[in-house]
Image (cartoon, rainbow, N blue to C red; front, side, top):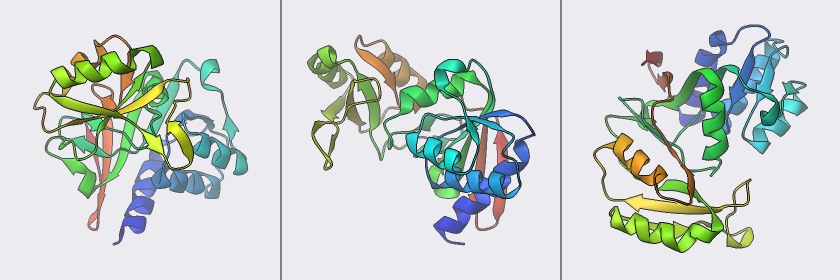
Length: 225
């Protein structure tokens, strides 16, 4: 089973966890798009969607789902998302889209926050093959870089070939990518980073993941915390 097939199988495993008229959170990425397709094919457009992803929002509207604005929602029944890596302790790293602040808001609203991954992304402990992404107030840019060095990391502003200058978050803040060779205590690292004045949030997800759907060529399994 190749990677696209694994993503489709992962979405299929998530579908039974969605009931009629639920308010659901949907992140970004191909697996989430597959889940939207499956919901549409099952004529389950009665669910209401909240999403931190503009791409997912546009796709859900295209499929005739009701999409709610985040500021109008205080509770989500279940939320689904992908990640770069998640470990056996349910700590996750989500850096690609740089929308982690909004993703964490959805995760906090959700009774169930479920990550959808193939087996290559489920690891014993986070390896930091990708950086920890930080949303940083513009005035704190230099200060935060220095503080990251004190923690043994190296932070650089994210840039995009499609834009001159730094990548900016939905809230007008700077996105920094912080690399760490190793940090054995993920919860401690997340806390230390969030204690630095000027960091809005980190792309480490600690204490919010309730389930993980892991898909491999032999099938899908649901892990519960």
